[in-house]
Image 1 (tube, rainbow, N blue to C red):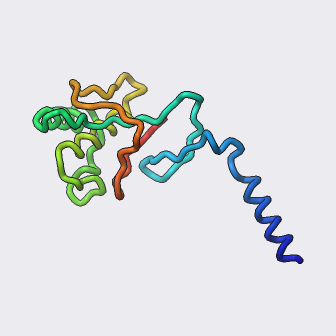
Image 2 (cartoon, rainbow, N blue to C red):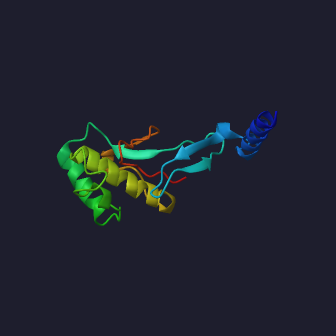
Image 3 (spheres, rainbow, N blue to C red):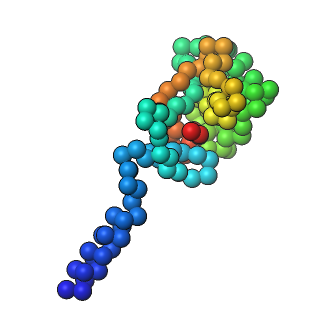
Amino acid sequence: MSNVLLIIFLALLFLSIMPKNSAKCSCTHIVVQPMCVHKLDGESEQWCVADLQTPDEELQVALDWACGKGGANCSKIQVNQPCYFPNTVKYHASYAFNNYFQNFKHKGGSCYFKGAAMITELDPSHNSCLYEYFP
């Protein structure tokens, strides 16, 4: 009998600590750890990625700008880092474009890169490579 009461107590305790409106809560990958973000109605998560139709030469120019003068943190696409593979201009540009966009979107930054990038609502993270999202 006491085991049943203990199980009921633990179930009620668990339910009491759950978010009241869990339907509007989504997990968002950030640099340190997953974090729960409550979205406003109509708000969606957006990432900036390379447009797959853009030639590699144009992507490389935009990638160089993002990692240089643009101020994106491109350390994760260096050798032996979690976003180095696949080692292609498209993947590296996508990571750099998104890093720039997330860090500067509220300061006038965009996801344009002379037409080489586009917005997606699908999280482009893969394997151990987490693409940041900042509300």
